[in-house]
Amino acid sequence: MADIIRRPSKTLKLNIDENWNVTYGTFNNKNPKTVYIIMWSWLKPLNDDFMDILNEVEKFVKHYKIGLNDVFQTRLITTFDIAHLKMLVNKKSQLKLKLHLIQIECKPFLETKENVIKIATDIISRIYRLTGNDFEFSRKGRK
Image 1: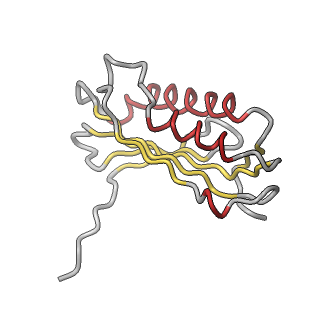
Image 2 (image 1 turned 180 degrees about the vertical axis):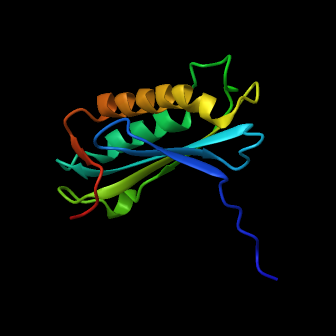
Image 3 (image 1 turned 60 degrees about the vertical axis):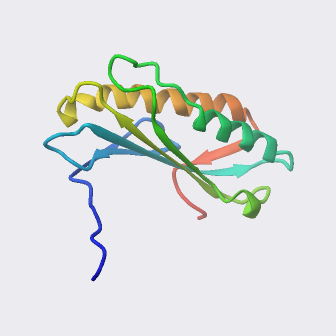
């Protein structure tokens, strides 16, 4: 018997930053207790000394604390995905982040948008601060 693939019942794109693709959604539009955010960008290391910086970014993402404790539980599931070993200087690689947020009060999906934007904006700005001028970010891939 084939596995059933669960599809999100609601997904929206957010235009937060010119170098990042951001979507958010829920698997249950009628009772959106869990909201997910998917963020990705193509990044290009500009010098050979990029691994330590990527490790700092990964550590930040995995230990990220939400400043909206009255809206979402502080416990969240995060995924940081980048092919560290395949990265080369001046070659783009995709960085992808996934966050699953659990609402304290189950508000309608569209009412979570403002808080999702705050979280995604905060994460992007912190990643920019951690990477400094050592990476170039782009919304589009290798071309």
